[in-house]
Length: 589
Image: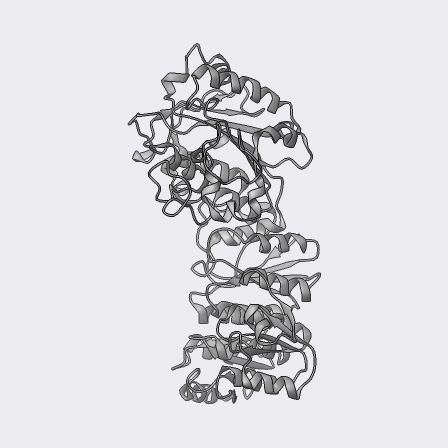
């Protein structure tokens, strides 16, 4: 069972993806109150015994270039990598140098006096230690100087010196290979790096797109983005690691100190976003190495990487069973127009047998904002039933991007959709405004487009072993009651829901939410005024809710989303994070 061992300050977690401890992983982090303090915490974890380090590597906490080569140096010298402000050495860092290093030990200061001032060097010397500054005329020369201190290795990992992400991922790999990180000038080769390569022939790897352009002769390791590049480095050099680490892709300091720490354990350093979901490439890699990994480390406080991301890391190693939830979207009817209506006998039968939502409210008017809210926790600034395009698009995380990140499958089924992945306008009974997925370019223009499917394949898919866990269904304009009658919608549900209940998907714990988007023209509200789309019917149909009775608590569209997210153990997005919007509680598992 993987152990995520962390020491430091951790904020309360609210509604994260299922708390990692509950999934069998202890989710604490190596974190101090600031970047320098985090480096000290990491040093204490790596060298718990006083005076056990052979050296110390000291780098600027204000900029990254001179320190990118520091991780392999620290590993080779059996040293922690500590951080300092350029102007002065803090008392805490001075104390850690005194704790970890025997008096008279060597402190490698990375970069020139612009990076780490002479004042800092003098303060270190005053501790009784030997200062060795490693620097060049620029960041490229400093990396070459670090290579010299390492004995001029012939294994070189090149990364751009114009950004930090690729160099951070390269550092842990260079430490494992006994190599060095050298820098390119973006997509152009740096003179100092070129001269070193010419003088020390050996194996070269270009980490990231810019470095691969700068040195076409090197073995390129290039992902679609910084997250994927770090994963590709991990796959290439760490096929079965026993330890894995992660740090923010948005800033460098925690990863600098962490890179030396994970380097001593021969593990990769992955990059994660400060908040939101794990990129699918990162989550997939973590799941792929779950069999070998025994320790996972996360560097930095919650301002660097929040608790939700931390929980996603733990969940990737311990995913547990995935929920089976389906949403069927109906249209434009008030609660009073459906409940008790003799033209809706099947719906009313379901309400008596399962759970009827008696205080359920749409988010607003017209239809499209409700659909966007249910998918992403936000109306995305949309206030009309516009077609996808400029000024009418969604961005950021969605429920399904969250599911992708934790390895949960999904499918969106649209009645009268012409073909898989269709992203055009209205056609037949298909209304684009009832298909929120196509408003997100990240879905409609990516690999997930294949998950938007004609409803004609729904039952076949639900009977298969590969049935999606989360399912969205939008009937056509007649069957969703938008253009059709209540009786037509009721008859459609009477045909579809019993058939769904006969599938393997439903037998494996399927839960069906039948939701109306809005009560047409109603001004009724709930939930502190958030749910302003009128009171609408709603049903939760499952073996668990059979005979469970009505849910009389107030809930709106965002509350429905939050309830689904909790079923899958993912973070609440946008309005779903507001408890005022309600919850299905135990009615949805």
